[in-house]
Each structure stands twice: as structure tokens, then as C-alpha cells.
Length: 150
Image (cartoon, rainbow, N blue to C red; front, side, top):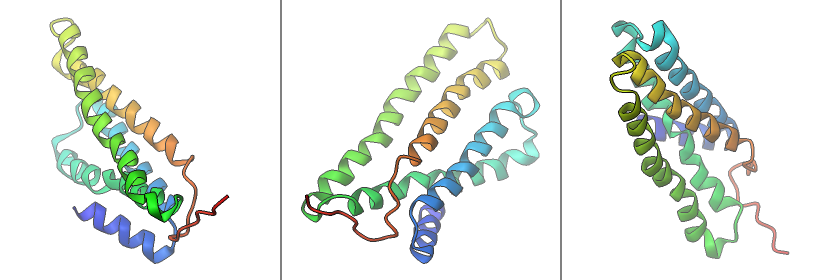
């Protein structure tokens, strides 16, 4: 909740949508990199709580996607536009758990528990990187509707 509120306020204050998504997304990727690769996939407990807090704070980078979808489409279809963007979060929630679960099922007993989860979380990191790359496809709206009828 804190991350969503802060990214929205930051975006409104600087009149940019893409830059806050890139900043928050970068922090989120770095958090995943630390979680997956620090100390062989087992970050020290002292950094785990702050790391997870930072991950939670930066994960709402996607939230500005709703605003962007509203600002690049005709006003009469903004509801549809935002719902299409909303599908992304549901797809991630539907696709990643079975992938992570199948990796755990396939390699359980072959890999130790730390390596097992490190390999599983690697798929989450890949999904985050794909989402981050998608930010570069977003049009900057400067916090206003930029739709131009043809």
C-alpha cells in the first residue's frame, strides 16, 4: 500500500509516468537479484526483512500502467483499456506459481532446498525482467490524456 501511494504521488508531482515505473522497477529487479544470487540464494537473515520490505515498496511499479492506459486511449473506452492492463497481474499470478511448483516438483530430491528455491525464484526474476522491458514500450503521457482521434 505504501509503494502504490508513493509511486502515484511521485508520478503526479514530477508529471511523468514512465520514469517512476523505471525507477521502482529497477529497485524491484535489484531486490530479486539479491534474493536469488546473494550467498548462493540464501541472503543473510539481517538483510532479508529490509529486502522484503523494499521489494514490497517497489513492486507497485506496474500500478502506473493503469493510468497510462487511461491516458493513451479515447476517454469513452478507458474502462476497457484499464481492464486489459489489469489482466497482466492476473496472468502473472496464474502462470508463475505452476512454473515454480513444477520446478520444485521436478528437482526435489535432486537439488538441495536452497538451490531448489533459487532455481524456482529465477523464473520470478525472469518475469520481472520481462515486465521491466515492457516499460520501455509505454508512451510517456506527462500525466494527461494524449489520445488524438484519427
